[in-house]
Image (cartoon, rainbow, N blue to C red; front, side, top):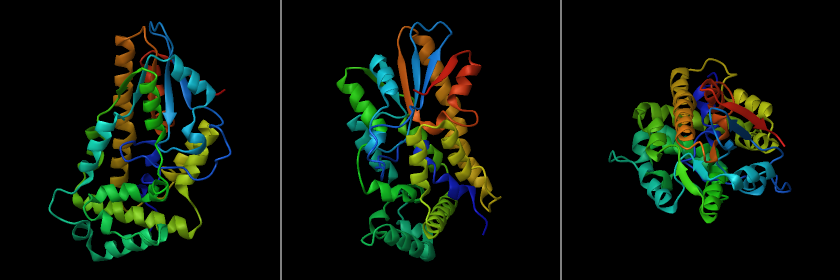
Length: 315
């Protein structure tokens, strides 16, 4: 079967979605911070202070857990810090319940014996002590999204977004979110069960093929993020998303990608523009997944169309 956009989609969630994190990064421990900051300055349209777009990756540990000095300076000078969703303990504790099935079925009931067998095999490949038992209460899409990052999740540390939120709270800064958790969950909750099963099947196929070829697509994205090279990150995203054969489930994949990036980029840009207009005397630091600031129709480009000057800071 030809490669599918759905399978590719599961590999770039860490650049686009925060609600399913945190996870940890493998390797690259020798670096103190990323080589370049994914940082853009916002100016113009009557702003009295500079504001900032900062691209995160929804994992932590090693160099990713530390802000580049330029990003740290922008953070320190900002009055208000925004993440994708609220990262306070109460909100985070409340997220777990949303992943639980409410249809009276187990995961095995929903996906059938053959896919359950494939899931168990993949979990064993990740960790010999794993099987699908702990996943039986979860929604099918939750398992599909979790699988590509499960190796990293078992390492367990705070995501960069959580680190930023905690740092802002300790510094007494204003903390807020651009989205609500339910906005992110709706990307997948609106899928039919049949679509969710396809999503899981393609995630499993992608994991197996990557392992057999000796690849680790999530680590490749991590490495590109640490480099801070916008072109390299874009190339990695394109490699894993857009440069692919026509797949059997292309329509589903395109729907997911539109919901994850295109639709949310528009709403994020609208939120940021409104906040800047309402509080031009404050410096705002908007920390969201780097995938929203890179590539086609990204948030920065949308803000330019609204009249703001957006400048990449690379040193």
